[in-house]
Image (cartoon, rainbow, N blue to C red; front, side, top):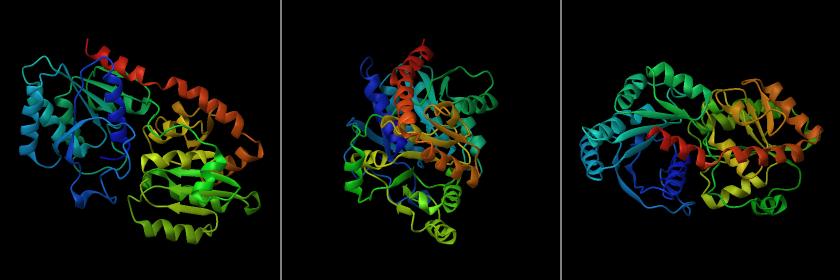
Amino acid sequence: MRGGIAHFIALLASHLQKRHDTKIFSFTRQYPAFLFPGKTQMEEGAPGIPVTAAAEIDSVNPFNWIRVGLKVRREKPDVIIYKYWLPFFGPCFGTICAIAAWKRQTRVIAICDNVIPHEHRPGDTLFTKFAFAFTDAYIVMSDSVEKDLQSMVRHPRYQKAAHPVYEIFGAAVPKAESRARLGIEAGKVILFFGYIRTYKGLHTLIDAMALIPRALNISLLVVGEYYGDERDYREHIAAAGVGDVVRVHSDYVPNEQVADYFCASDAVILPYLSATQSGIAQIAYQFNRPVIATNVGGLAEVVIDGVSGLIIEPGRPQQLADAIVRFYDEDMEGRLSAGAAEEKKKYSWDAIIAAIELLNT
């Protein structure tokens, strides 16, 4: 499987394995094809962290959940850890954990990306409560998720641990080298990276680009697969008159190519309209890239205004344009890059491993 959740699980397992016997149960089918908005659910490049995973779980087959629950039960685990990011998986995860831990000393811990999703759908609350009914403890990675958990679960047992930095995309490379590989000419380059979904605010960023004087020679690199109507974004770019300064690579980026896009950029832009936390900020920190982000969810907990990036209000194109111009006018790249390099020291995997071990006591 591909994407940030798979990367997180692989890294978590690799760090847990330093002190614990660990086994990964992955998916045979994560989403039914008709529900999946992207092009493919499978990784196309080399795995960043080559871990062994048993492909067992079919997210939409209740008979499979029973079988997998029994299989996990036979492993006699001390702890079951699952990543919770979408209520769609609530029935699946809840059933597996209920069967695997029934009348056993097995603890179940959920690492919560979201408790309340960005895009609401029927059944969200019911599915989440079902999964959490069979969960003993939780890890949250931002203040906003902590509040959501407290609103969903009465007196939850949990630990807060920051989202660790992703380590799977290789070392930083010189900017000129990355730009040469990507065919980017000299100039000022900002990056929007990741799945393109409505709540991520790309429309706001496109509008902001229209407000930036062309004489400043600032271009936007949009890299990610559309999880929505691609035509809508292309029409928005055309209507805003920024087709000459916005370059779009609308495909999922294999792990081995991620470094080039971040290292080719001067700053990473997260113009989110809503958020809990963002793994993109942690990838930016891996490559010491400053981040210009909106004050939503836990982003301002990670991106320190004036230290490792800039914080603005969501949905305000002029404010975003002003922040981008200020970044260049005040020559902030060097100082904020140094700040990003310092901030990333806070986001080690040791903290989340310690939280898991504490919840298991």
